[in-house]
Length: 267
Image (cartoon, rainbow, N blue to C red; front, top):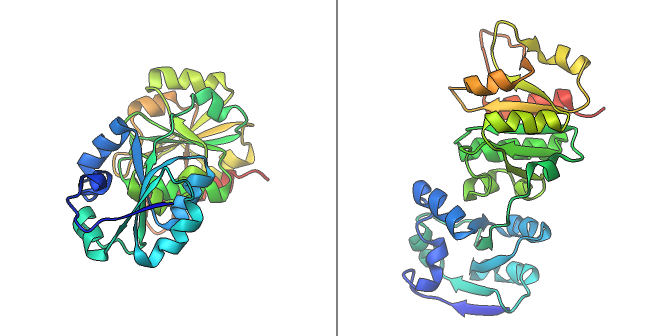
């Protein structure tokens, strides 16, 4: 393993890790440059297990042995820094000790991702990275076969999404859908019934829908507050709602995804 000790946060070799708290910059920069950031040895291990290739690793002395067990390739530089250098570089205290700049894999076509799937989750314009990561974790834990994200949905490979998902973004197959004008035909052509999780006068309760669940279901989830768009609701075959009590009309989208996936899981 190629270990390079770096003492200065302004060193050009550390450019991939600079100013990670600037969400707007990272959201634009990472996809364009073909990289994303994996944080913590556990997440880095899951990324490597999924076949993703590291570009470099940033690590503090305390976690070096753990990283040495994961990254053996001499072509991958490991930048060893002091805690204060890591914090100055990234803009926050790197408590998990290690960051890896990873080459972003090319997304597969929708047809490939859903080919053998029976239950997929569709995320429409969910811009909160925490919610995206939490939904991926629910999808992995509750048996969804794939996740499809809209063109304007937050990046599942953004650092916060990856961390909240506990690395399950590398475990659950996913890709981006086209706009609804095309996406509806793609999903119907693959045999999916589109179930929109939303509030509507003609909505079917989740348990009733589950009792006569179609063979293949695409569960549509929308952003906090705004919910699913008119185009998504028009594309849906059924609007499904979770029966609520206590004068509460809805749940956080990540919590709602877990409830719905539990009810729709394969039995």
